[in-house]
Length: 144
Image (tube, rainbow, N blue to C red):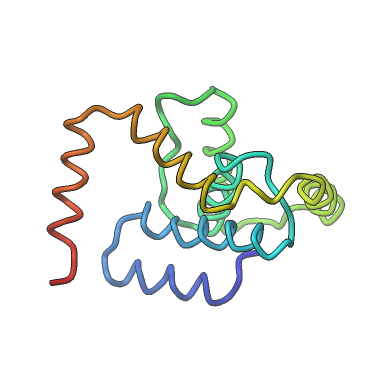
């Protein structure tokens, strides 16, 4: 279950009219913090981000399922997460099993180096035009 402060920040972002991906970023940030605190680990940075996005969808953030560049299983899981928003809880036995598995994983997935490496790899896969568009949009929304 996401922490109360995270849900409040997401609600504030929603009221301010920020995009679903920005709202979901709060959950991803929470997950990164959990790994850094030692609550659990993750096999990779990508897994840590995926856990955060999954929590966001389950919390009701209108984040669409990924379309390209992901496996069919991941797309289907994202669809299930969106459908289960606000519905029944995961069973306690399943929740414990998931947490025990994550506790066995390493903590380096949330290091600054790992996050930086992931960001560079993901950016390199995008076209120059796409990166430029994002930079221009960021510049427009930046506080003066």
